[in-house]
Length: 139
Image (cartoon, rainbow, N blue to C red; front, side, top):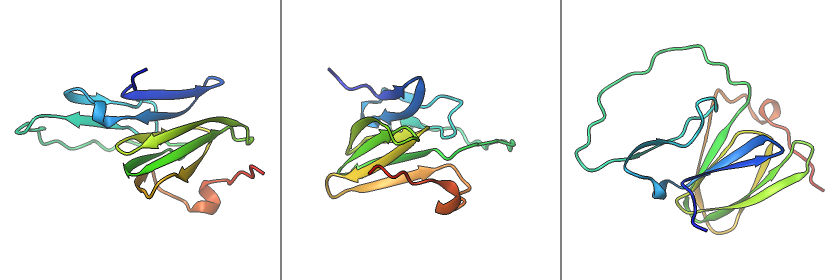
């Protein structure tokens, strides 16, 4: 089975995460997240000389009720384990070099499978680990 450019991970009707494979992009602009997600991820695949017209973004009040994050594996390989907030394991996914996963709901952990370079991106502001997250005892 061939890999998809964007693969939603859904358990019990909850959208946990989306794995994104930018190297599979078609020409042009492709958005890989839904408009309602707190993080928006788009891919640009354009030929040399393409000009994206100068622009700015308007100021709007936006309410983000939880932190979403993406991790992009620049080099190496990681495993992302997904859990329900009560500690039940939902699934496990290998994220390879050149791939990204966006976390939207429930809980997650990362295991570094190879020496890796990973970029993490979150919506802010960040209120620190004591306020912004709860660690789950999986023991």
